[in-house]
Length: 155
Image 1 (cartoon, rainbow, N blue to C red):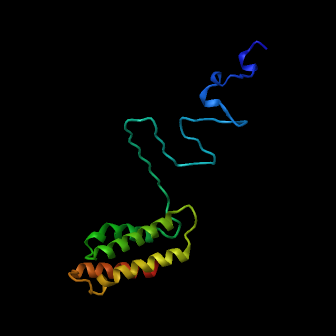
Image 2: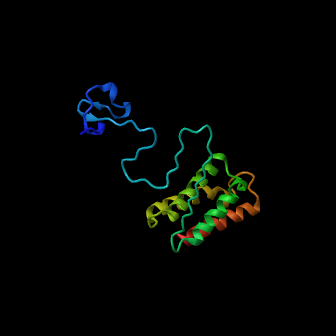
């Protein structure tokens, strides 16, 4: 019984600030991250003057969607030269990224979601494919037509 940890402390000044009770319940002040549920893939930094963090998520393409992933990657690379308006280019980029996210996600691709993203992409590229977009070069028009045909055959 001579061990000080066995005897209760009645004087609050003797209780460390991080372990005082509040109305009968124990209060803990943590000086770092506290997780109350399972977490994964997080990056944390605290008490730093500067920090550089990198994270790489190498996700696999769902089986059977490899050609669509290649088409989306090529489309995103060539999209800036497609002759689209800023708004149409942004819509096409967003739709292509949605397609990639759907086919590389942890769950099997949801066909309805994939079909909607592809249809949005076809709609954004249609002015280029038909030559309606002002200043569209012939090579770009053919590229847009081939992308739309590829989308139609893959989804």
